[in-house]
Image (cartoon, rainbow, N blue to C red):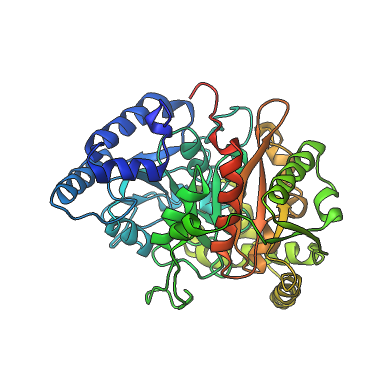
Length: 465
């Protein structure tokens, strides 16, 4: 057990609360005090809902003392990206255009977290509209490993707060990489589920047909505990998948690690345009998987260029569809990156957009065929380790390159788990993705958990936090 309780695992903290060894009220008070003391150095929270969190913690304490235990999340402090509607609480969506929006009811996933007894500490920073960059009015979220470097986005606050011990887990969303980028940049474990596996009801959209919602935590096991609460059909979201939800956390306990898993590797995909530190770290992760009796199988990843272009076209058109009323009312409330996306989406060529949707269907079929021979594909998250904040504008001018390892798998709807697998020469985390066929989250979490049982990259902590 770590001597820093804010870095204890979600599962261990929940077990301590369930046994009575820990008080959910004391744990919540300690976490709120930590946020107050150090989040000014990160700006990972846009709002801390301390009064509501303490009320929820007190309710959890009463219930557990009365013999009602709701599961691993009961009494555990977590946080949510500031695009989920919560009843009576403003959601900014990271934008001045929506800063006065107050939810009339909880988003489905917020309701499920409350039903599981989780304590919601507050609302986490994000790129405006879950796209591009932080609104200038809210300032940037900073990377706890190195403030000069981008913390990933759009779920930047989710990654930074989880990495710095300001919550025991968080929720993020992913339309083109927004769970995977901050998971890699902050050295945490994030799960982008199969499209439709989690409800989007009550969540501000970036692009309805691409958005996914998933957990971010400091280990695959903690992510599995969160995902068990989040996953499943929601009648309020007709696009959610009406298929049974297995016990993801329980599956880790009874699994045979990575034994027998077939991990696909495309050498050209791994190495083309990717820096040496990332390649070396991913090859080391592959060696660990082989030591765990997984088999590395050569595959050919379908060409991603058209799929990436299709993701950008679809994302910007659907983004414009949602924001058009607010943008028409007062475009000055939008920051430059989101305003640019809305403007481009409003002027999209319908023939080009139709081609993008056709490309998406074709790419889905190609990816499904690739997975007919393997259980998962190993992949970088980004082509380079870390991006300096002062270089982000340049990166955004070449979105196809920047999104090349993430956006195509939003197009295909494929699930992916991102976990730390190394560190750069200057100490920045390096992440690796394991991407799988639809509904393979149990297998992906099992593989990540197996790796984390024999490595300690997920145990590293940002210096000074």
